[in-house]
Length: 293
Image (cartoon, rainbow, N blue to C red):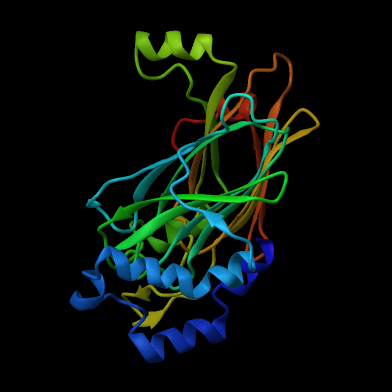
C-alpha cells in the first residue's frame, strides 16, 4: 500500500496536468452529481494498482465507517472508522487505508497498525472533491483484504481556499495539540470507557495541508502542494500506528484514535511534512500547552 500512496501522490507535474485538463478538478455539476455506481467504477479502475490482484471482500461487517450523507463543508468532512475482528478470530489488523474514490489523489491516509491489534478506531477529517464513496480497506496479518464504504455527497473540497490567513498558518506550522478524549461525552460514555481496555486520544497538527489545487486569491496562482505526509505514534517502545498521508487530509489534520490502556507507558508522536519539517509531541506535555491551539 505504501507504493500506492507514492504512486498517487500529487507531483508538481501531475498537478500541472490536472490544472490544464480539468481546471484543478473543480467539480462541474455533472461530475459532482455522479451516481453511486460511477464511484464504484472509479475504484475498480485503480484497485489493481492499489492492491494488486488480491481479492477484496466487500461490505465486511467488522468494518464500520460513518460520515455525513451530505457534507456541510467539502473541505472538512468528518469520517469515523471502527474495525473489530470477530470474536475468536486469531488474526490481527495489519493495515487500514482510507480512500476517496473521486479525489485526484484517492489515498487519503494509509495506517500501519502495531501491537497486534484486533480492534482499531480512528476518526479524521477529509477533503472530498466530488460525490464519492469513502472506503476503508483493511488488511489482516495473513494478507487478506476486506472493505466497507460510505457514500458522501460533497464537491470542490480539494480546490476550496484555505480557511485561515496564509501567513498566520505558515507561522504556526507544526504546533500540535495531543490530548486524551476518552472521558468526553457524559456519564454513560464515561462508564463505557472505564469498562473498555482502550483509551482514546486526539492529535491535531497546525498545517495548511495545501493540496496543490488551491488558488492564492491575491497572486491568482496555484499554491504548491505541501502537506503532512507521515506520522508515527508510540506507546512506550511499542508502535501504535504510522500514517502516510496525502492531499485529501483536511487543513489542520486531526486524527482521533484508540489505544491500549497501559499505565506508565508514555504516548508520543513524531511527524513530517513534504518539505521535511519535523514536529513532535507527547500526551502529557501537550496537555499543558493546549490553550490557544
